[in-house]
Length: 472
Image (cartoon, rainbow, N blue to C red):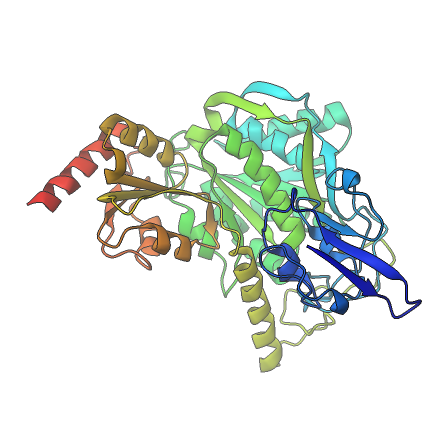
């Protein structure tokens, strides 16, 4: 795990090393290194090719890479120095393109930040946990419009901004302008977010697509409720899954996360900001009314690892061109160029493929499983209780998907036994199951759309019925 290299400038020998105690073999160093110095398991394969850009040290989420004479004792505990930015098809920096010599004056890359709340346990709602996660991730701008059951997020962040003087809040006239405002704030280098529910989320779609096209990081929380239209404003549902993934016109991929409890609302909100900043993309968090208002115990750590984008931004002296139209690599409009359109969409697709290499999914499957239950969101909690109540040991497996897009197709395909029956419980008329059908034969839908959570007894009955049919 150690290599040496000689620079071309002055023949200085510089040390490049990976600390095996910190390395989690996530593969990010291999993924982003422009010279392909690293292997997929955290090993140095070609130290001589290193160009000294420092990108590996900047991006390592565990602070495991030592570059130069930095001591191992300081690894993982300091803010890493800025490295060279990378240029994208939007004329904005992107971690998948060639090295540029311009470095923003703002704090960049991974750093350790102290949480704004005192570390320790808290009894808090899912909405409140999202707010604390956003603030600990560095959110400094919120624009929104009140809507049940997401209004507490706006109310809470207003109070926190006022108490800490670290952020700016604007109440907008509608959800269309809310997303426009957080996109504008983000393009000045500020971490920004908004929150809404189903009707407002529908209004946001065009601007979310603009954020995808312009590589603009931002976070949108959708606290789902029963629909369609106004529906039942105070009742839970999970009917916005397809809209979150494919709601924008054209091919406009974005990251979609789904917590199952208040602790994950906190953790995945921090994750959402980190992913948005690293990959320069909007990230959508799907919760629902039940998670939003159920108060639970969460644990807030004293220190948080956060990422600040490696980009030039408006206001720091760079000349930037941003357009929602098809554009060349310098950002200039290319609305009639077929190659520019193909290159741009290929880049967006490549971005999602890179993100998909690190899925967020809890799998508890065994080759002897007769039944596997695949779920997401609050329903996963009912699944866990149902499996516990049934007490059938290795006969029942589970998979809880917490990153819904990019979807973990390979992980599910590899985990589910070939002959096992797959049950997909959902608080909708069948959305997740369409993705499951890509990798599992004839999954069994278990849908509920009455505005109430799916109870464990409903899942237990479905499992018993399935196993009884298998015995016949």
